[in-house]
Structures are given as structure tokens and as C-alpha cells.
Length: 179
Image 1: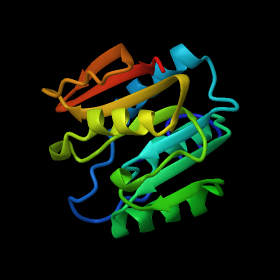
Image 2: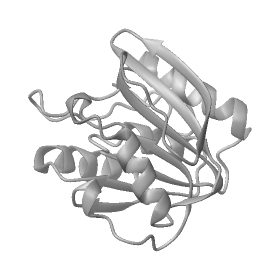
Image 3: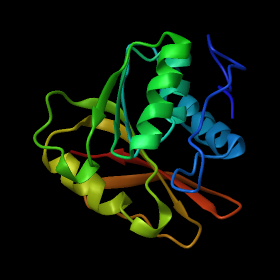
């Protein structure tokens, strides 16, 4: 697994051993960032949040492409170790919250892009988006991506679907926050 584009293009990322963490495939990540890039134009000056961060591949890709900041939220110890090692290896400036996503309280700030890639069996995309939107984690007009199983339908209240793509067993849904 590698960074696809930007200042860290081609740099390898570490992943924890075992099946607890399922990093997004390079092809899936590339598709997500193509959808984001076409809508954003640039990642410059954007605040990103990577939920269920795992290795941090999504947030680190955004930072590599010029995002101003990224907050990573992850609770698994092995994934946190890999995430912190990846941040250190790249020299990235990032905020890591070692906690479960569902324990996040009111937002300290609103984010421009939220990326959600939970374990597929959790089906946590819709409840996470709706809850964090109510708690102020998304700026008006923010983009949110949810990766889930191909059969998942992602239709949270307060969001408009911008695009959906399927890659193997995965479905990416890109939404715009209307709040």
C-alpha cells in the first residue's frame, strides 16, 4: 500500500498484521480521490477528518495532496501503532484521537472533508454521519465519503449524494452536507 499522489507519492505505508484492519485498496482510494479532486479542485487549506482511520491511508493521501490538517480517529491498538508509524515516517503533522468514533462529543471545529471507512459488518456510515453532523463536525457544504459493502445503501438525512462507485466488494458513496 502506497501514497498515490502529492508530495509523498510512492511512499509505502505500514499496515498491522492480521485481519482486524482492512485498508482501502489502491484502486478504491484512487477513485475516491479522483471524485474529491473533481469537486474540490484542490485540497489546499482544507481540514480533513479520517474516521475509523486504520493505517491512515485516506487522511495521509489528503495531506500529501496539500490538505492543511487531518484528524485521525481510531481505537484499535495495532492500527494506532501502524498509523503513528506512518505519520512519523512521512513527517506529517496530524492529530490522532485514540478513541472509538461513537464516543466523539461536540466538535472542536468543523471539517471540510470527512472520510468514513468502518469495518463493513458495522454498517456505521449513516449513523456516524448523522450523529457527527448534529454535533457540528461538518462545515456547511462539506463533502463526506463512506466506504462500505457493495450492497450497502447510504442515504443519511441532511446529505445529498454526489456520486457512487463500486469496486470489487466495496462501494464508495460521496455526499455533500446540506446543513
